[in-house]
Image (cartoon, rainbow, N blue to C red; front, side):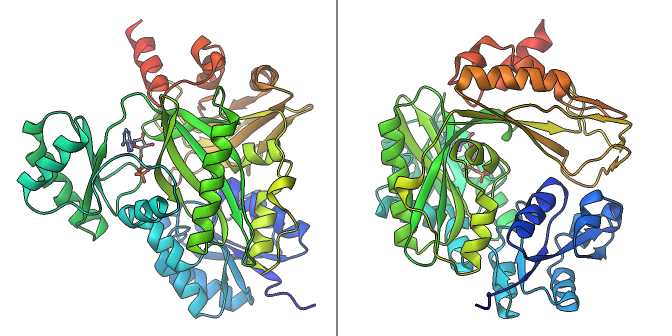
Length: 453
Ligand code: ADP
């Protein structure tokens, strides 16, 4: 049988480029890795069947340059493009261009990306599928500040003003009192116009002490829509996840199953294809949808460890047009997994740390997995995200996973640059984190206490 494609261009870098490359190899697909001038010597580049330099180090001139990527695909005869996460992975116009060139975009349709990229449209789609959302305005806010004031009063302060096109933690503002509303509206609207080319705003209840819990989905083009489990990603700093785990501790499994089924139903209604993540805030025993990510996520690994699935392989199989050989009943979760994001950064100031790695000792043993593109002697470039490794552990239960993470971190030794390994060691000794179920503010509160001591 001829396959839809047999050569994949990996339009990303670092650990996820290597992760995708490994999945392609298992499927007997040829690989093309693109790289900037800064990544020329990276080990994973040498593992690919072909490598193409697509530009100078700044991402805007390499990994974010659609024309360079498409030219590389044409030159190498790659018939599919995997965008990974970040960069162009949620760029609907790029997905469209890839398909217009007769190539396969390994992801959902451009229409799905576009719908979910507009948070008002996304919320509407979720409500239609019975996915619970944060209470708030119906659709976009009117221009008239007095009318918005009436909506805010009905929802109840504090509220959050959000830009429909916002992302990466930008374009949102908490409003605690009616007297602050008009200014917050004006500032957020100006920001939305400038940064997102979409002036629409909406408003929702601001939740004070939520957890971040998300649901992984996987769908094919033949009517199979599955949810693969939940993850708790509450341990964050400046909206960046630091530790993720699966399953989310201390939440009623029946409730999670009901939410998971609503997510699968939403995918059915949307005709969604590929992998995706429904992000929720969880507070006082209830789930509230905030957004959907239409791509592979960094933390897909913890779901792989508990579900025994290769999610990237499945994602590519779906793009090949294959029917998933899985039903919801086949998705069973076992044990507990924790991922520590190891970043090249100062563990106290969090300033990025670039330079040559002179020691790179990785942990091992049962239930320990390290996803990393780094080898000793590599130079960490200041041009990109500081993620250098994902340390993922799997244990029989949460306690076991915590012990494995602690033991693994004690074995991991990196020199030449600074890393946040000391922060992870500290987190694993934190009683509140060990007990499970901390809020999204916990890590920052703990860091603030540490500075005050
Ligand atoms: P982005 O696309 O910018 O990541 P999200 O809608 O995912 O935007 O929100 C980012 C973060 O902002 C959330 O993880 C949460 O910490 C906070 N947040 C968003 N909406 C609310 C809300 N209604 N109440 C409290 N916090 C919120």
